[in-house]
Length: 114
Image (cartoon, rainbow, N blue to C red; front, side, top):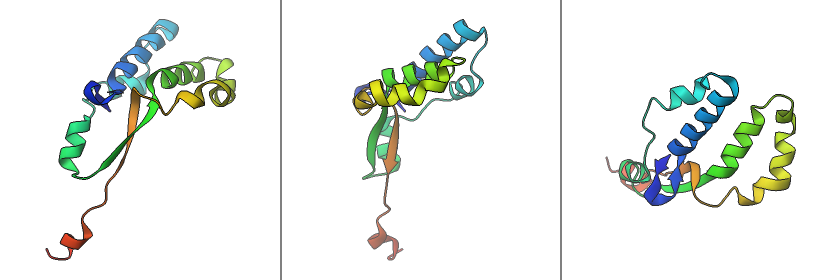
């Protein structure tokens, strides 16, 4: 998700991670490079397509970046889960966010009238 006006910075975080990965491994991270080829949805687009949807931010961008870089580091990556629980988890539900969870329930009352 990327929409700076609503505290979603997914694209910026993906670019930052892909640059870090390139510096560390001298190649792009394949999944992230593929992800960057598309425009992520904005908060406004989701709300327009799914009226009444609940959009909740997930993964604080700094926590996501730290977790993802540590996870991809040889040997140290084995400790990522433990470090996350001990140091980063408490901040993970604060903005700005990397991604989102979308919950939408179609209006069932009007569905039966169609």
